[in-house]
Structure formats: structure tokens, C-alpha cells
Length: 213
Image (cartoon, rainbow, N blue to C red):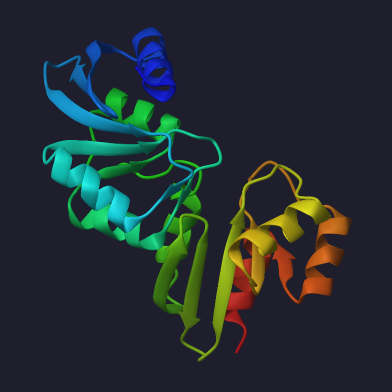
């Protein structure tokens, strides 16, 4: 049994209300929910989840309800997210899987680190188009004709190194949005963003940017 399967099963059995969680084959587990319903979840150890990978899992397990990128470092490409949503497959990290098992709602489950922030963006009337390139990177087109490539930064207090590392990994961004509600970017992070040519902001500042004519 692969390490991520073992850890996922142990966690679910100890911490989540369910009847049964067991390994089937490959990266797949079966979970029997507390109401008796059975679902198939994929526990992937891949560092990057691509559209091709999701499609392959779906071909191997047509009834899959959830795909979990188990590594903390796992990155989801936009195409993978779109495929999962179009096929009513929940997606995200280990915490997202646990929440889906608790609620029984797999179809609407998304990566919990970015779900609330991205929902805020989707609700903004000033945005005419959203292109989600990765789980944490999107390009938004505004009614005023401007367009911004935005990176969602989860760190409690992003440092200069966090901003530069994100830039190196995902390419140039116009805005680094610190989405952690409990912290704020350091002055060093703000300075690093200025050096790179991007704004490092919290939600209120991002809203103001979207309102600018």
C-alpha cells in the first residue's frame, strides 16, 4: 500500500465520521459514509495534477467522486480543475476530502485553501472574465478594460522570499493577493513585489484596484 493511501485511511478512520474506509487498488479508496452511501476517492501523490492525469484516473475509475492531491506541495493546473468540475468530481487537498466525507457533498467540494477567496472573486460584478490557470493563479478581466494576473498567497505573513518564490514558480503576476485572513504581508514582501513589478495586497486593496477606472 502506497504511503499516501495509508496516511489518508488512517486519518479518515480516526478523525471523520464514517462507516468504512478501505483501499481498493492503485490510488483508489472506497469510503462508506455514515448514511451508508459508498463513494470512490483517488488519493494521488503527484506533485502536479494535470487535466491528463484527472482524465486517466476517471477512465480507470469512472465512478470516482473525489480526487485528492495529497502532497502539501501539490499544484492543480486549471485544466484539471475544469475537467473535475465538468464531470462533477470533487477536487482538492486532504482537508477538502475530509470535509466532503463529513458533509457527503463531493460534487461541490473544492480545494479548501482557495475556495472562499476564489468565490469572492467570482461574485465581483466588475469582473467580465476569469481564467483560472492554477489552483492559486487566475487572470481577471475587468469592465474598465484592464486585466490582471493574480496569485493567491496563503502564508500568514508573506515574506520577500515567498513573493519571489511564487514568481519563479508560476511566472510574472500583476497582483500577489495575501488571502490568509489572519495575517498581512511584511514590508519586505511589499518591497519585493515592487521590485518585480507587482502589487502585494489584502482583500480591501484588491477590491479598490478592481474599482479603479
